[in-house]
Image (tube, rainbow, N blue to C red; front, side, top):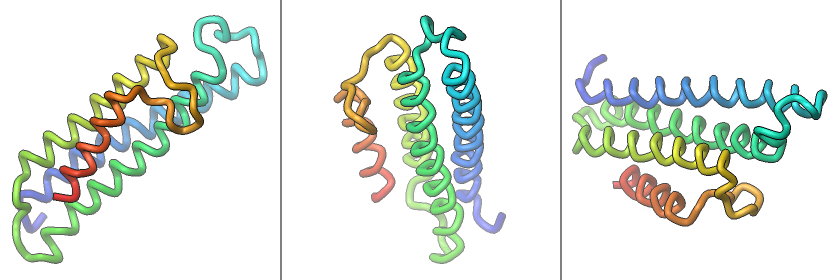
Amino acid sequence: MKYKTQKVAMTYFYGALVLFLAQLAFGVLAGTVYVMPNTLSVILPFNIIRMIHTNALIVWLLMGFMGATYYLLPEETETELFSPKLAIVQFWTFFIAAGITVVGYMFKIHEGREFLEQPFAIKVGIVLVVLMFLF
């Protein structure tokens, strides 16, 4: 890597990989519950598994795009990132918000609207993450 701050991108890539694997696992679990409805459907219903699966897709793609931006931006501008610490804070805010959202889904804490199931506080966190990214 030509610039030190490009290492920030690796954090995003690893986070995206973890979320991709989680999406894959919940997809397999959703398929199992769909084909054999009595398997885990009392503990973890199909609609909750589906929410986690689809939201994991959105989050890992966004995290990968953010990581790619943090990798390519120093190359194109030929300078270091303005604040690598802000990028790390952004990563952990996004990753922890995703984790809290999944735990909330498992305890049936969601708004029930398609692709907008996150509680309001998590939505505010996501907006803050995007604003940090745009800075």
